[in-house]
Image (cartoon, rainbow, N blue to C red; front, side, top):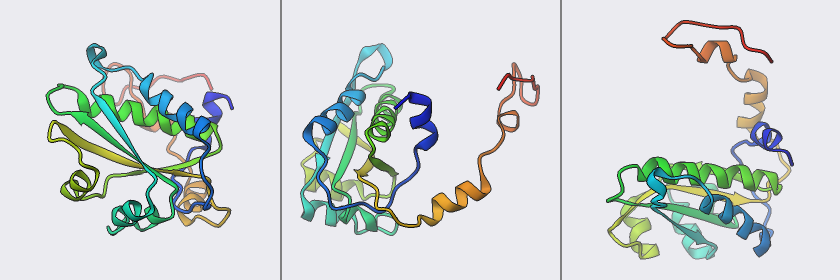
Length: 176
């Protein structure tokens, strides 16, 4: 799949088939994260792939994470606290994984709703790391996704409404 197609097709998926992600596909997705740029090439990340059903069930005990119990994989993105731009660097790596997963036919959903201490303790994450985000991943179930339907109806903001040149409010016509 071409990269712009993957970017446009990507949506938050909250319902997954109970189908294992083949290791070669999971490896390519993780490799996309490893290949991400980072400040001073520090690569301050560590990714924990959670496939264990009981651990995913614990991660699903929050208001906005109920679907994690059925997500075949949850990737926990961690960043070294002592690295200045670790949050940005881990976020870039995770987004590269999102696009790679989309190109592989997988669905993903960024998760910011988690109890850091619960996740840290359960996954034995050393104190030198901050937990930046969780990423649900799996094969999307074919069912109506209300959020995706609303997005298609509402659409995206026009580029000219969200971009200024050289100063806020200064617009230029872009080629489409």
